[in-house]
Length: 121
Image 1 (cartoon, rainbow, N blue to C red):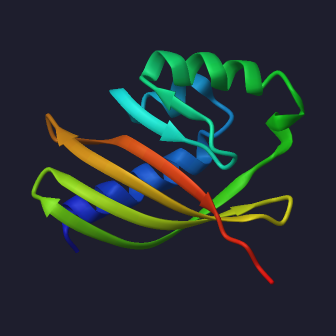
Image 2: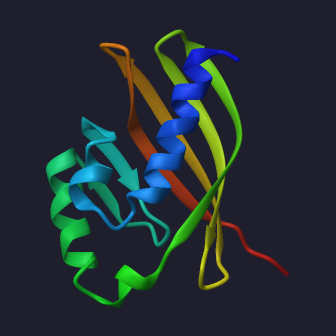
């Protein structure tokens, strides 16, 4: 298998595993990351993500857990990839999750994470 795809798959697994670990999760991000969460809150930069995530984990949001299902990876350049995922939330919601990942010094990091709710009829 392609080592870059394997590394990106690991980032996806780590993002799920570290969702309640501020330092661990934000370590997966670029310094200038852009993140748009499930309800449309837009964050910019690792510091802001750390601050907002720490506050959220001191509320009942700490019990809202997700599973990430990786659908595919598309390379835009050898050092830039799109990962398309489905986010399964333990409260029954589903989201279309997109990561833009960049490779820097042989390490893949999330530069953008965007979740869009998937409506079911």
